[in-house]
Length: 262
Image (cartoon, rainbow, N blue to C red; front, top):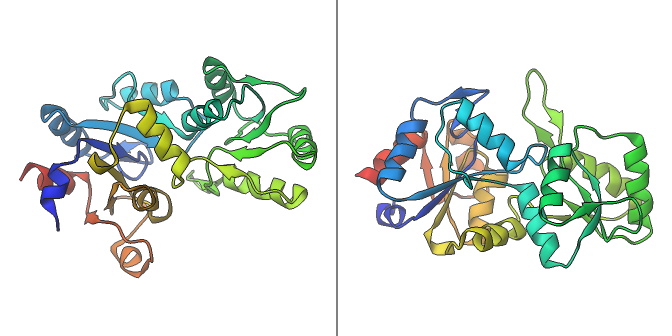
């Protein structure tokens, strides 16, 4: 294990559910780990594909859980999508998303419109209706570019997972015959948006998460150190059998913290 590489990391990108908490319960190692990073002047950012909530919504949630978070310490796939679209010169979209996502887009200068949009954008829309799907399908079939904030098929929920943006995108793919450009983890547009927003260098970034196909693949595809924690979805057996290989595997972020502090 290359501990020296770990010690050169200047920014840790942290997945949330399964990494710093699970089903609303904060892991006892979480706050000591974050305090250790702060004491060493090492930055950390919370990263999520869930575009149904804004970064501000997540900051409020984390603070209620007594998890320290800075004013710019959360970055969502919705944020990344807004950054990407602005770079493409897009300012008018037909948006399938929550009020939080629509407000975030508006703050970035991207308006929701049903008349002559420059793109169709699909987020994790908890307010999805057939009328919205029909309108989006009509636009996509007529040639309007199609984007999705992230590829997750399901969102963890008790007692059963919920259909997420990836599942909704599959529906529109089937009806329109068009595949969306996907922005969020594990794809490059989210990495590029992060680097641009925060002025980061790839060689000094580590992605920490519990999912091989989003978190770890995000790191390996984009030149970041990839750190799998076994406190959430992925077991050691799954990691050993999988074709996505993390750079490091730890039982939890407490074990990661000990390795950094050694």
